[in-house]
Length: 450
Image 1 (cartoon, rainbow, N blue to C red):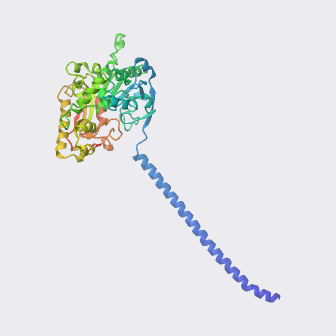
Image 2: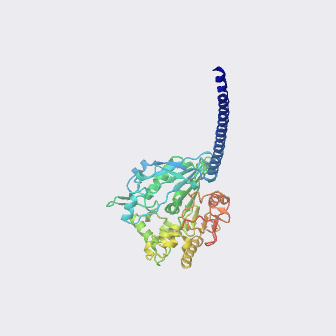
Image 3: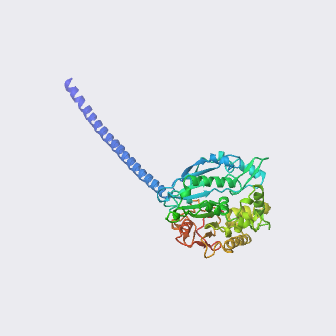
């Protein structure tokens, strides 16, 4: 039994050994395969990580930084002065304090946002952020000339920067009350009370100030520029004490505020009719520049072309020669274009036919003549000018159009000098800036919006 048993076990041992070897080989194969797969996955993960880091780095280079968000301040004390929004709520502003070398310099930016000229339009406005501080955003972005980036805005980034909210309907110039409809047209009081408040919290001692605004805010700048200068009288106290006379440098920047009294596509004057209603409804007349109202009617004095020659404070006009808002709402509004012949052209300037483009070239010529025909751009004036051949509206507060260097591929330029550099050169006296672009389509740097 023992012998037979031993003989019987031999082939079984060899079989077991063979199976064991095979199992070891198979196990080693799968272990190696698993290790290779794990290594490959790690390699993939490392590659994905590197790609992800490269994508994040590229995004950091190409994506603009998040805009500075600035909280609202409600000026409750202004209510006692009757300085209120259209619905009777207090006015408001946003302030980002200056720092370093800019601690004693100020930008006061007047918000834009159209107008209202009748009960229906004013009711709509009253029930929006344009007529009530209760409905305003609690914080807003500061960009362009209001940016805190030393790269994008090197001349003004560290100044005290203020945005005064627009909650009347007449470019901060109205003085009336409609009891029936509950409309407070108190734009002039809002302007006065807010500026006086800013003076009380530090602006009165400023070395440098710039009043700026875009669109309806740009028109407000033109109308209020000399009033703003008057808040900073020459101080002779130091001189009387044996020191030197101190002054504050005061200048103004009106962006897209050069609204023209132009003939529309039907041969009428749509914007003049609109402005006449605004001035009459909101009691604007007494607050318009006296140098203009002494010789022209009040509606005419709501048009910058009739005001700019009488402004004594240095002012810079930044405007697109083919102002997009004026094309859509003044030159070819629906009421002047009932057939819709201008609809495509208003939406896309490349869709304008030869006749339409000739009409727009005539508008551009009128704009150029309005600034060159008087003393505004004279050789002795301290005014600045940048009229480019773009189909745009408002270019000072947008990152895409406000840039120190045109080489960065952002800012429209005239003779290789972008908007931000042009404004800065003018404000600080680094160069005289009276730039007028050649007619469309010569300018390839434009950021057109139609």
